[in-house]
Length: 435
Image (cartoon, rainbow, N blue to C red):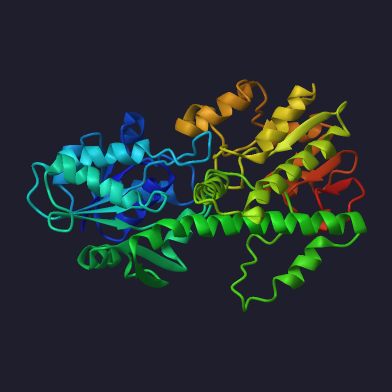
């Protein structure tokens, strides 16, 4: 099929490469000329395992291209996938300006197109957004929904750091639409992938990302509360949760049920806020959901308190992003910890091989500029030098190279947020955040 993808961030870039690898011709569309030029040069717009190779191969094969020309993209595609950002507002609602701007652009582009066009929204949206999107397209295109075009909601469930693996191994594919023909056409994009394809009403599909991510957020906080209690009692919290996770009959995933540091990133905090705000708008009390981010903040404060015991020592952080294998700094709890410690006058240096300040763009750059504007002066390129120079080593992400770096350290404090390796736990100079 001929496909256009609006937005070349995480979801857009991964979808662009993977759909092309599956044999489709894909045009990426973005207002950011740098991203467009990267794709047309065979380079990925993100740091993500395997994406760079896929983009290079598929660009070389002539199956992908990128443009800022919306009219061209709509003219040369039958399906448009929307993957633009939907960040939170200050009050927790979704900022849908990018979504509705795309609706306006597509509406105007469809004015001069006679063939049927399908619009599939992969961005995280609230229930009712697809209908508003369709209303805008109808108004500007002078065309009728389900006669000249159709709307499909196709939420993504990709984790940063494992996005390509998740794309090709989905537990299920969810498609919401009021147009069965359009839904089946989008389903064809995923027929060769494992996992059941489920076609549902639009609003069911629209809310599922929030339900999933709110539950994931709940799992992390629950595991940390258990871990904190066990830590105070001298009980191995990981052994407790290992036993807990053996019961998989109730669809409990062990992925998030591990005591450790706070959650972060662009999805869990945003989608949790979205569901809380939705409940508030509907006058529905949700005390458990309301308390999840409070527990997460307590975990961040716990980390600050733990590290601040060594306020007069030089502190070295291994990892800054919110998880291993990504350069995403948005809502990274380590950024909160470092910001607080810098405010208390601590001496800090940071190593993260995934972060290239020159490559940071958009909300990722805006976030770090607002929190640690002088980050460049704290970053070092040699992790071994960091270990040699610092008195306290704080491990924030689970990178394999960090195991080697701290394996033989005896005369420095090691503070571990991620349970890097069980063999390190027995060291006398080792401190786990809640085990």
